[in-house]
Length: 442
Image (tube, rainbow, N blue to C red):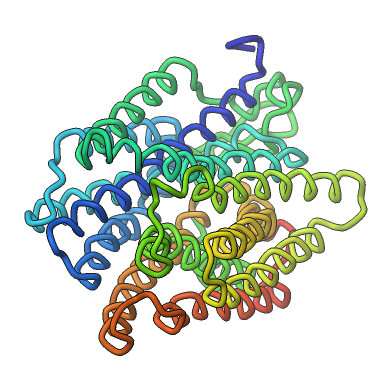
């Protein structure tokens, strides 16, 4: 028991929630600050898309290594190191759209550092959180992403207006350092699984192996050394794993496209000012925060009360979330008012977040011992979605700008929103057919 008498596992969940919140303040903040600086420097949409997507190249490269490092070194240490690295990068690198090489290197470094975060978080949560609390714990932790994005959309445009784009980098670095201090002070590793107090304290059903030769209990109370190898081949050919991978790709394609290009859609597609929109521009991300936690609570309720099996619960919430999101995405370019656009983007992102109570928790269902590894594999696909989606959207808009003499017509944006809309329908079908809530990796 620590910090206001909270059990350790609750404190860990709260701190991981804050970590994802800070990370997404950084991501949204860069999008806002760079868009302002790039527009002032006359940078075209295709070039903006290239810079905005650079982060995801670094992010993709470190997903699987992040899961491996968390497995071997420990998620707590890897999470701290990643925060320190990206915070220092934000603090040291100037925001100058004309210094392309420096920006590319900086965004690659930030991407690599942040790529270690989610595999580390899933490793930590799999160690600390018992099965009946996993849905709401993971949902709360990941909902920090959306609250961070909402806070970034609400406060950072005003900060840019008052202090300039560079101030965003300094504010983000300060938040990263502050979180690192809290994590260093309060986060701990869980007790060993063989310790009798571990189960009594309500920790996770199994701890991840942290070295190549973990000790295994014997019936007579002694212990022996048994080599543990990561079942890479079984993971990579598993259909349930690929169901998670496909849905992770689609979720992040939609999320990253909207996160990086909604500011441009509001300002050039709808001719609105982000500063003048006030708090309404944060509603899509606030909706994600709310629906993510609702999904986690509903999932745990359905499982604990035995209303549905784990498998049916995951499939039900994933399908509802992705199908409703697809409808909202397909309708988004039809609405030409700020209210209509906010409504559609809020419904789309909110129900995508609801769907995370399906595919995003499924790592721990099927592979609690290797949750960080499976998360790294699936999040690599999600990151590739960012690379493809953000860069391709810039190219689509540059082509639409020529064809339609600007970006103010709905036709200019139709392809941007239709692609993730149809991907949602396809992904929900894949998850329905191939996913399971049963443990398939020992």
